[in-house]
Structure formats: structure tokens, C-alpha cells
Length: 496
Ligand code: AMP
Ligand code: MG
Image (cartoon, rainbow, N blue to C red; front, side, top):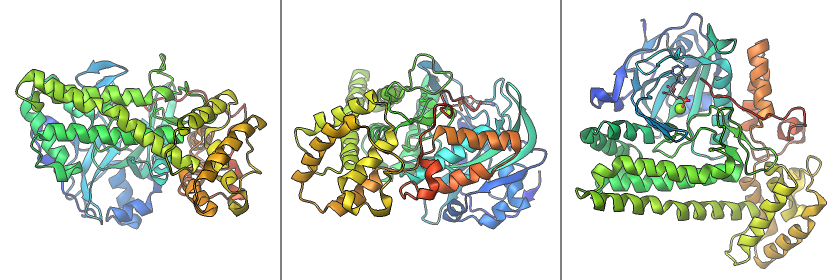
């Protein structure tokens, strides 16, 4: 395999862990790599030259056809609970970690190629990814980052020039994914299942140093890590709920200790509000429905706690009590984060006893009127101060049904109690209530055009538009509108 010139500043701490954490192996080269998109802003943040990434040499690197100096490619071991059942052996079956880059801000970031060929953990899989899931992850993960939600990022997408066989032959692609690490709840479960206490201790130390360095010297490092993970997940899932984001496959191997969103397989944003919404074609019981997400994160954290029990205390009863106490703080933390976010969406600063009912009644109205989740909140920002809305007013796009009027009157009365400048409040509300989300019908249309017609224009237009989800521009109407009845997407499919 050719070694390209050093263009990246790698420093691979994970590759320095013991050999049982991974399999060292290079990506499998592809027939004819071609660039699809390079995320220039992210490249610069990582100290990479975007022009080099877009060049033939950079494309070969991003496709896994050449390994650059300093990269130590590997596939990581992990386990996980999938739809509630434990699988002791998952691991990177189609993703290869090229190494860790130091960003311009000094932060260490993983660079991983998804769809880079078979590994020790591929089982029956081909180690590849069709173009569709690569584009979906690119669009949605970058939209999440723009929306301020912690997320893995998309550095680039390249096509492979090779077909991938699913129900039909599809074009293949590779996504270059960036994450602050790929340590999952399932990474701990892998070693816990093997009763490998030494590896667990190493992984706890590694994760604390990477993500919670101020806690690296904690008296009880495993407990400090568990508490940090609880906090991070409570905050993350509250953000998903506030945006109507449905992850779709909240297995413990898809929950990162960093608190970033990962795995954009069957994910989707809700259009019309319905808390029972499920998109994933394989989620038959609705386990990962919108309304269940907070509870599932709690369940997943209990799996992490279980894996860490051997490290929490030498007395096993004491250890279990510590684990339980840490996990028990989740519900309050979620509620606190979610309530704070909702109040920001509604333009409220103070805490008042009537707020809980006000919020609940809004959700009941949204559900009974099947109003669009995103645009309902956005309209509230307009209505908070119609005189100052100016060019951000989107009434030509969306109006709330008359059934909302009594609730709106109550909310206006509640707003009036707080002596704040209406224009300033409205500006804050516009920042809490995006107008553009990656609508499913647009994501599907972008994927279909690219897959069936080799037309990438809709994909690029969508990525460009979603880079600023807050600012309404009338010419971007088509990006903001909910789907018509015939455009509605009812199911999404995992990238496998
Ligand atoms: P995911 O659904 O992406 O969370 O993946 C679950 C597990 O299946 C992980 O161990 C993946 O590496 C593995 N996997 C998914 N798709 C493939 C594939 N096409 N080839 C090999 N392994 C795969
Ligand atoms: Mg996954």
C-alpha cells in the first residue's frame, strides 16, 4: 500500500492501549475513489488542508487506498445491547480508525473511515456502505452540529466506484467520520463480559483523561466516569427531544461516553408531532420511539453502571449501591435539562408554578392537531413579538390552527409577567427554535437523486442550507416546508 506524504498530525493514544482493545489492520482499497464532498471548515479545524483532501492524493487517503504517515489504522473491539439483548462481540465491522488528530484548539479527535472494508468483526458483512447511508449521515450529523447538538462530524464523503449488494446493487461510498472518541457503553460491556477487570480499569482511565480530564485524579475514577456519563446523556437526549430528533437505534454500542450523538442509521426528525413516532424499519416494538428515548438512555446507563460495578467498590453490595445511586440521578438531570430547554423555546426565564401545565397543554394541542413540531415552535418566536419579527416572520410559510388561540392568549399573559425587552426575547427564541431541520423527504430525495441519477446537487444544496438552521429566507421555502401527504417518509433503514 502506498504511503502518502504526511499531511495530518496524528497522535494515536488508542493504538497504545493493550492489543486486546483492537485489531490493527489497514482499510481495504477500493476500485475507483472519487470525491463527493469535503467539509472544508472542519478540515481546517483539524489542521488538515481542504485542498489536499479534495485532491487525488487526499481522495485516496479518504477512501482507504493509501495510509498516510502517522496513521495506525485499527478496528476497535466492543460489545453491546441491541434492542435489549446482549451481544458480547460486535466491534468495528465496517469502520476503521485511522488515528487521532490534534485540532487547532488542541483537542484530540478520532478520524475514522466508515465503509472501509472487512475486519475481524465483520461476521457475515461486507465491511462496506452504500452511498445512501453515507449521504444521510453526512447531512444529518452536520445539521446536528449546526443545531448545537453534540455529534460526530462528517469530514468527507467519497464514492468507491464499486457496487455494494443489498436488496439490489447500490453504489458504494466511504464516510470520513470525526468524533471526540469512539468509546461506547458497549466498549465497557465488552471487557465486563470477559471479566477483564484490568482492561476496564485501563479504559476508565483512558476515557476520563480524554473527556473529563479534571476528574482523572478522582478518588473513585469509575464512579466519576459513570456520573459524567449520566450527566452527558441526560443533556444530550434532552436536546434530541427539544428538536424532535429520533435516533432510531439507541443500542448501547451506539452511545458514546463523550456524550456525542453517533450512528445516523435509521434516524429521522419528526415532522407532525406524535410522541409515538418510530421510523426504523427494524424497530417493530417501538422500543426507540420518540417518547421512549429518555427512558432508553436511562436503561443504557444502567448497562454502563453494571459493567463498571467491579471497579466501584471492593464490597460488591456497596458497589451496586453506588452504581444505582449514580444512575438514579438521571431522571432529575434529564428533567432539569429538558425543562430549561423548553422554557428557552417558549421565551420564559422565570420558574412559575403554572409553567408545567402550560407546557403540557401545548404538547397536547400539537399532538391533537398534528401540527408540525419545528414550525409550531418557530411560529411562537414570531408571535412573541410580531412588531419586531421583521424578515424572520414566517407566517407566509406556516400558521397555527385557530384551536391554538386560547393557549396563545395564556402564553402571552405568562410572557407579560416577565419584564424583558420583547425584541431581545424574540431574538433568543429564534436561536432556540430552528426553522430548518433535515426533513426526511428532503434527505430521501437527495439520496435518491444521487443513487439513481448520480445527481449530487440536491445533497449539496441540503448540506449548504442546513449549515444555518436559524435564519429564515423566503427563497428557501422548500427546505422549511413540511412534507405533503405524498412526500411523507414513514420508514427508514439501517445502513447495513
Ligand atoms: P450498526 O447497526 O451500525 O450499529 O452496526 C452493528 C454492528 O454490525 C457493528 O458491529 C457493525 O460493525 C456491524 N456491521 C454493520 N454493517 C456491517 C457491514 N456491512 N459489514 C460488516 N459489519 C457490519
Ligand atoms: Mg453502530
